[in-house]
Image 1 (cartoon, rainbow, N blue to C red):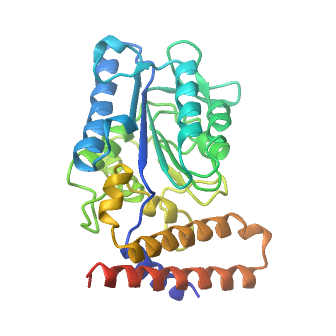
Image 2 (cartoon, rainbow, N blue to C red):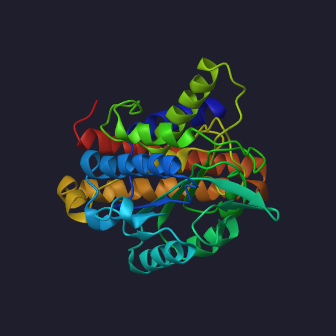
Length: 329
């Protein structure tokens, strides 16, 4: 069975799909000093430039909140207070269409207080529970939230759910040393280093795999003990993994989520209505697989395996048809 699933998934994921269009929210939190404020801003700008210039995300689909607006008034949409973060995400959820994608990148420092992980902001911090309340408003969209801070591990437990990819820089809230994960995660999009399948796009899975590899390499090159272990969860079970495998654990949704420009750009690419319909079927099957994995513990093993194989075979057939219609090998 595992061999069948592995072969089918390898075939189906070769034709990578994406959400209809992506909205990007970058939040740079409390720096603590000028050096960190500038470093966080550098990473945020690199991410935004990549979104705009490499992946065609229009200005109106990007929001950047930072500790000090004066650092870059033209780019920064507002101060990164708890109130502004919650308002930004609430307003975004209210105006998005079903099927659109939301990519939220948290840059800064994290902490663990009162049995909860927190993202440090000017003024009151935001806990994982605070983010959970806001993300619940995205009822029909695909959401990726990446917390690149220390002590971020509990965000997975608290935010995991259907249509969500949650990535944290640490495995637990007790990994409290300053992290370097953000530097390499952003580089995955800003530089031509992570596009493994050479399709001119970078999936969240490709970015995660690249960043975790480079983090390990950075620690080894400095002969330091690895104190951060990034995790990814996208099957809704509330448990992350440092080695995602779309066939058996996490990674299917992260593999499918790539940054996509505004609707007119997508329409131009998908002017073929048959192709557009096939791509929609592909998205629906990928979501069905993710939903099934979230119910795994509630099902009999044989029933789960049979249904998973059925969905994967369907996904493989649709993906093959898409490749043929696009003229691929």
